[in-house]
Length: 137
Image 1 (cartoon, rainbow, N blue to C red):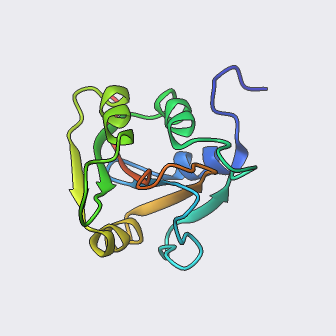
Image 2 (tube, rainbow, N blue to C red; image 1 turned 90 degrees about the vertical axis):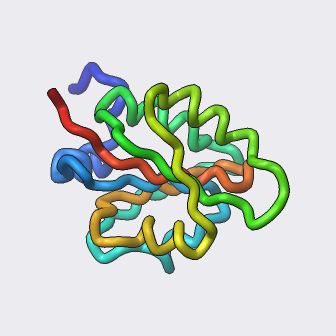
């Protein structure tokens, strides 16, 4: 019986096996997770229904369990910055939000350091967030 916010067994297992510098990808509902899965990553589907859960809901729970030292997003090729980026910045104070174009983001997110991909039902576009685990002091 756990008393903390994070209780999902597969996510807990992946985080327990991860270390400083390991990466976690939280995806929106449009991300091609099964075809962009890295060799070392576990894949957890949380997409229950459209919009459930959101990327920010998953991020909130992860933040209760692990420190984050870096974060990256997939930037649109054109147009304004997606509003969800401001939400990410607000939830990750002191963490710079780096941006990659679509294909560079896919490469980074499926690299050997990514230990976990969590698929959400998020409907907002460009709501993919690649987190780097920090050090527990």
